[in-house]
Length: 117
Image 1 (cartoon, rainbow, N blue to C red):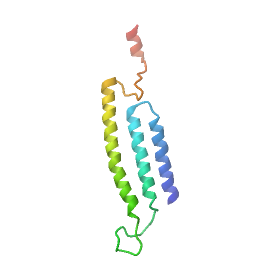
Image 2: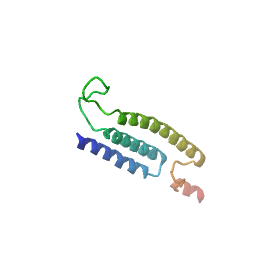
Image 3: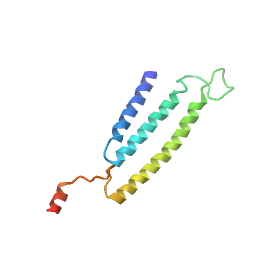
């Protein structure tokens, strides 16, 4: 179970880093979202993966740790707000620059070369 969980976190991080290194804004937003999902899974696993333990105190002799669950819920809210902010920045950058490239560079296309001649 732990190997599957760790490999899921690793795949999410590697895909997120790959998307962060792209030149367009939409893949960068997806990469940030994937990395935030990986961090959420990592925080959740910090409370140890347990099966058949009570979530609420007083219903059993052993219970699950509520702190990682609270951290993940907080991280979900912060991640949603961050994603909304980055999407608005991407839309504004596209409107101002006329391109969705991260560095603002617009590559020359064949149509642009014909217009320049």
